[in-house]
Image (cartoon, rainbow, N blue to C red; front, side, top):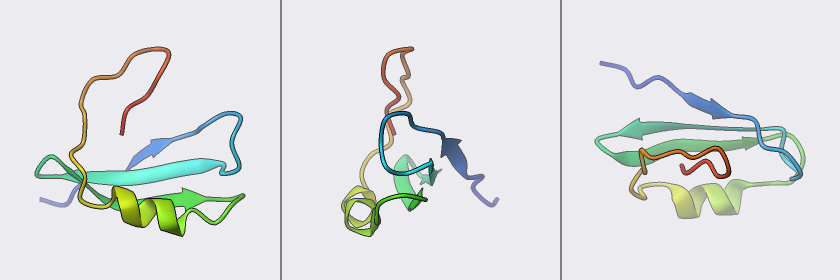
Length: 61
């Protein structure tokens, strides 16, 4: 089964959209679109555990 991308639209930062997939509880295919080059941060996030909890104040990847 193919993982569906999760898309988040941040506010107050360089990028206009963040997308990622969660595979077996880990982040994969992390992409920062528009604005700053987020390739370094995307590499750091790749393979990290994906938190499932979300609150109105913060959105955890």
